[in-house]
Image (tube, rainbow, N blue to C red):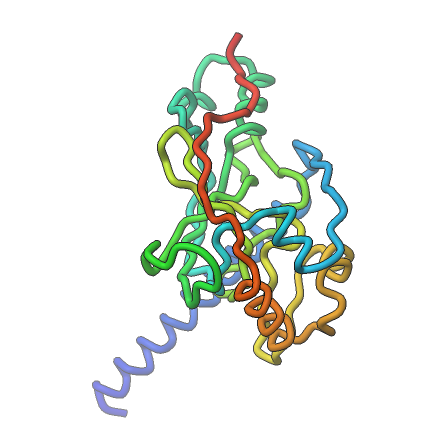
Length: 238
């Protein structure tokens, strides 16, 4: 074996190890989040069709996008009153957990593959701050927000609005707003009961779903305006 071949094989081996470790880290993170108790229970209205989803949840950005990466869980408070430093402060453990339950998020970078509805000038990537995460003994897991998978392509039904002047992106209707697009032409998701209730007529066919979605978009003038608001989250300090 010559030196060049040895270097090439060594490089492939290292890449394989790194990829394997990355997958294991992603799996362990996802499993840890899945085991958390909900820190906030959400009440969801009953939605029974794609047209009702568009009319009721009012997504103003619908994209096909792939999850490029996941950042570290962090306190995201757009009012800038709270940060990770609060979890290291002299506040009581109960108040620190209240802070985490209100603001702890995990950022994901999403590569936009196709814009189906909404502003096409958003760029090539956006960031979704998922309302779950763990820092030390403090945690958050909101409602029925799916755990996003690195490398997975999704059909996202999103809202984009302004929070304290910052543009944010979030799922329009958590249980069904991140459909996994599978290589075999089917779609799936974490909360199958909700997904079947809304998308059951499409027999898990991506083509049928996208065809009907594009038809509805072409036939209707959906409201794409963005709202500007301040956080409604309960403050921790007294």
